[in-house]
Image 1 (cartoon, rainbow, N blue to C red):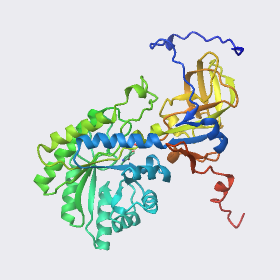
Image 2 (cartoon, helix red, strand yellow):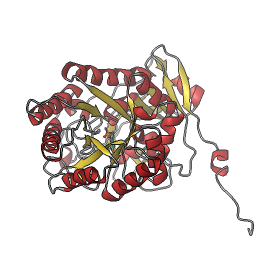
Image 3 (cartoon, helix red, strand yellow):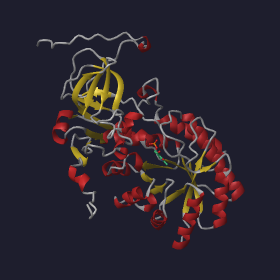
Image 4 (cartoon, rainbow, N blue to C red):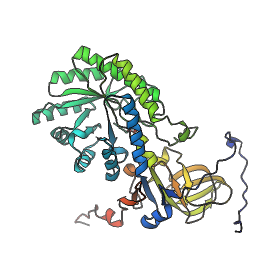
Length: 445
Ligand SMILES: Cc1ncc(COP(=O)(O)O)c(C=O)c1O
C-alpha cells in the first residue's frame, strides 16, 4: 500500500509550551463502543450522537456497592436524578438497587411516574413548594429540609395531612478543605443546624432522623469526606445527648470526582482521581471516629458524576478545518457547547474514530454555534482530520443530557449499547416540530 501524503507543517516554537512529560502521546483511535462500531451507530442514529455503555454504568455502581459492602453494615445509594435523569439510565441504577435522589417537583414526579415508590425517594433541593411537599409526604418520600421557611412550610403541610413524617436536615460545614456551600442547608459551626433541630422538636409535626451533607461536587480529596463524616457523626451524637433525637441515617450526598480533567487541573483525571474505595474508607473512618463506639447509622451516598460520567461518549463529525491567526489548527465539529456544557469545566478527552495519519499539532475543537464561546477543547495535540471524519469525546455522561440547551439546533439522539452488543435509542432527537409544539401565537398577531 502506498503511504499517504503528509502535508508538512511548521509549528512556532513556544517557550511556555515546554512539554515536561516527554514525547507527545499518540491519541489512539476509538472505533467502537463496547464492540459496536461507531460507523454503525452514526449510520443508524446520525451525528452528533450521545452513546451510553450499559456495562460501564453497571460496573461503576457495582464497584461502589462492593466497596461499601466490605466496609459498612447498612447503606443505600440514591441515584442523583439531576446528574442524568433519562429513563433508561435511571432504570439501570434502580435495577442495581439504587434509590432515587431528586431535587425538584419535576424530578419527584418523574421518579414516581417511572414506578419508583415514595419510600425509595430522597427529596433534596432548596425550592420545594407546598404542592411538592404534599406529594412527597403523601407518598412517604424522605424529605431533607434546606432552610427555615421550608421547615415551617413542611410543618404546615404535615399538619394539614395529619401526618408526622420522618425528615432529614441538610447541614452545611465551613471547616472543610473545600469551598463552603453554605447556601444549602443549615450551617453546622454557627449553630443553625442545632437551632433547626430544636425547632423541629418544639414543633412536634416532624421527626428528625437523617443528617444530610452534600459538601460540593468533583472533590478529588477523600480527606474532605472523612472530615465531613466526622463532624456529622459528632453532631448526631450531640443531638442524641442534648436534644434527645436519635439520628438513624447519615447521608453524605454526592461529589466524588469522575475521570475527567478540570480546566484548571495539571495532571489528567485518569491518573489523579481517587478510587471509589478511597472515598468509602475515608467516610467510614470519619463516621467510626465521630460515633465513638455507638451504633453506626445507615450510610447513604448520592454519588452522581463518578458513576455515570465514564459511561457516556459524544460522537461528533468534522464539518470543516481552518487556521486561526495564532496558527492553531481549528476543527469545526457538528456538536457545540449547547449539547456539551461540561466543555466549560473540563478538558474533555477526544479521540479520532478512525485511523488518522499526519503529525499532531496544537488544535482547537470548535462547535457549530455562531457564538465565540462555542469551544469544545481549546488546545490539544491532534493529528489532522478531514471533513466527514469523526471524533469521540469521552466522559460526558454526567450533567450534559440534563443541562443541555435547545439553542439553534435540535438536540440529538441518545443511544444505549448493551453488554451483548445490542443498541437502542433512549431519547429521540428533537425535530422542528418539538420546538414548534411548545409555541403559541397571540390572537392579536
Ligand atoms: C444534593 C445532591 N446530591 C447529589 C448530587 C450529585 O453530585 P455529584 O454528581 O457531584 O456526585 C448533587 C449535585 O450537585 C446534589 O446537589
